[in-house]
Amino acid sequence: MFDIVRKHQKLLQLVLMLFIVPSFAMFGISSYSSFMDKETDLVKVDGRPITAQEVDNAAKRQAERVGGNPQIAQSLQFRQAILNELLQQRILGFAVNQLRLQVGKEALIKSLQNIPQIRALYRPDGSFDDARFKQLLASNGLNEEQFYASQAFDIKIGQLVNSVARTELPNPKLSEIISTLYETERQVQTLSFEAKNYLSKVNPTPEELQAFYTANTKLFESPEYIDIEYIVLRADPKEDAKVFSEKADQFANLTYDQADSLKPAADKLKLGIQTQKGITRSGAAGLSKDHPLANPKVVQALFGDDAVKNKRNIEAIQVSPGVLVSARVVVFHPAQTLPYKEVAAEVKRQVSQRAAEKLAVASAAERYAQLQKDPKNATGFANPIWVSRNKPANLVGAALDDVMSANPDQLPAYVSVNTPGVGTTLYRVDQVRQPAGADAKVHKAQAQQIQALAAQAEFAGFMAYWRDTAKVKTINPLRPPSTGAGS
Image 1: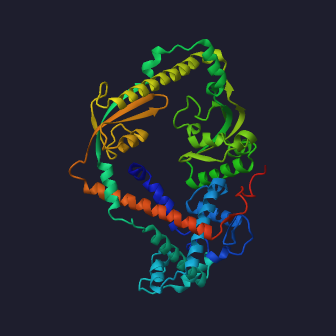
Image 2: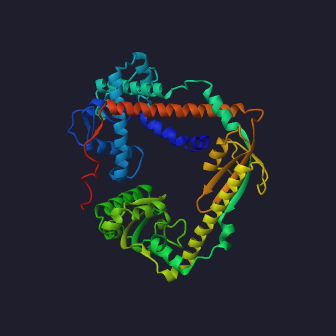
Image 3: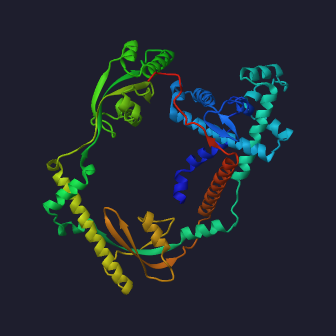
């Protein structure tokens, strides 16, 4: 569990930040009240809608804020992420209003002083440039009342989120108990029954092989593949960066707006249309790592429904600094079942492997039954090793869980774990111990991780409660924007 938390800690923090960072801050959505009276379109929260226009506007602002290609704001996936964020913010806003939270003057002033654009308005003598402040608000479509209201609202949401995220464990000793469980060591011996050791004992008949092939034709298909044409725009080191930026915009717009052909973009920018055959979902064989078609994003886009079914250009993709590519599917070759003669060897291998695995599993079950009758007979088991959840050695998944769950009051204990495609392994647990000298740093880190998990679980429950209370209702699915290339 702790390994998972460590590996995905940044991701979990990012998810939490989606709740904490308001999307209606000073240079985001102008104010919470600005989208309360629009027509129902996508989702309703407490009877108030989030409209497609709001999503489009927020997507454009976000794309500009991160310096991305303007076309990203047209992406359905990007706009869905924006809608999800707006929905979370609206739910939090509903909770703030229902709880009637208040913000003191000192908290509001402190918050304003943390905004770089506000700090920049103070003159060297310490006085505040009120005229520039009003101009700044006006340029963002705000008056002072709206600005102060939105900032106060943001503070309330921050207070609400932080109060939920500070959830503490009900029992201070719980983290210590969990850490102790993770440190507890067990002495383990293994006895493997692997299919590869039983292959010599199987000899499938021609009838068995043919029957397996007929019943499992999906296993013997040639993969689907595509033949494509593509164009590549590369930055010229001799050109000014602004010139390439303009070309990149033209490239993206032409391939998107005239999606039935690459020729308009190729002619306008004097690019050659190239071809590539035999591209599978794994990519094209024989291409160098820096080839534009070796980029996974390009391959994924080429196998999208719009590219395969409608033969439309994929959106321009930057595969490396200064290199953009767009492509389109010319011919789609569906997967086909290969003739039996071409796959006979593979059919025999698979049938033999499965039969050998059955023999291995049966032998393991027989030995396991014997051990239940005579637990002290450890003949054939490997040398013992000490394992724990903190130091699992080569034990993973079900094997580690089952070994660590064996009853310590009934030793030696035996555990049987099947591994599909491999066979069965028997584990013999004969001793349990608690290592001396617990690592205080490890305990502290684990306590923090447990605390974080508890806070995340609490916050998820909190959001679910307010989502239900606000009677969130989906009105229409999010669709591609109305502007752009015609279908």
